[in-house]
Image 1: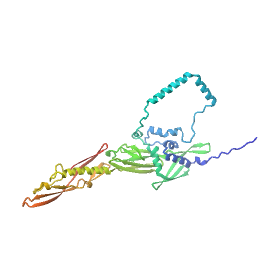
Image 2: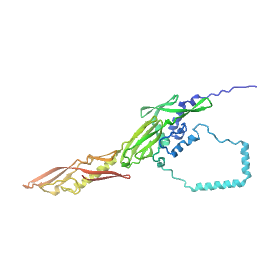
Image 3: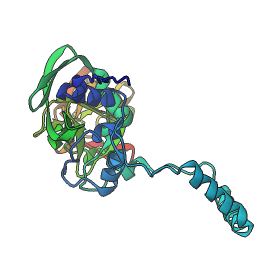
Image 4: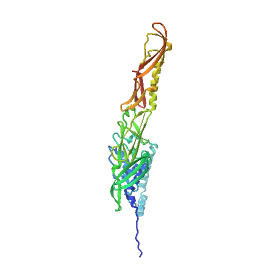
Length: 386
């Protein structure tokens, strides 16, 4: 009787920490956050992570990480399948009832609108919770696209990553834990909770500027009390942008480890806002100049003279509105250059004492009181004399 010995060769690298890191990076690169979370030993408690977010991200992890076996229902053998089919055929009433129930369910499904509205983006953020936008989809893919020249090095407690972002070198450590063994010989490595962290966004005075939302890696994120907290994998590239009609701002960070990550975004007045300010000031000053009098009504500039003035020759030259600048800071909108302006008035007159003809020119200092505020999506600017 012949006998033989089978030799089963297994690539031990598949069960090393760097292999786990490679699978993790592949999930991040494809924007598959659920697959990445499935490689964690447990989902970390980040701030006040909303239960709905936690459920969505860990659903695949509960079913089993990609590539792992799960406890499937035992398959029926052929005899059991035949017995089941015979039982179904032997009871036509039951089959008819089942068909009726299925038909009713189909009717209910058909009654629902085909294009049911998707949940609004705002539902992703609960007040005081951590926003999960960076953990999946396009925002996660955007992050991975910024990471170049990635290399992975095996370590006894995880894996080290080296990569570049915009030509700058970065390093990150992926901590892992040994979760038992596979086939009694190979270590089963899982990412430690510390491989996920938080990023704090701060947009000072955003509410004063009518800003309630920013873009993070191209996706909208709602602000709460001029800020937001984001959950992020390690590593993650975070690009924050604000490009409203009146205000602009941006921020950038490369998350390479757990700990405090904060992005402070300084808002700046947009060119459109500055143009609106200058238009409003020019309209006001033009209204004063067109009166062609020495003391324009409702205006802060004016002079008096004892001479006899030829009213048809009065001409005002007003300052350039671009001398006034609009900025935005922690206290909201502010104006500079409006309190020390100068206009020039020229006219012909007859001297009060000897009646001689005069060509007069006078510089007149004045100031403007300019108020700027947001009303919904509108920027409201009022200009009066100071």
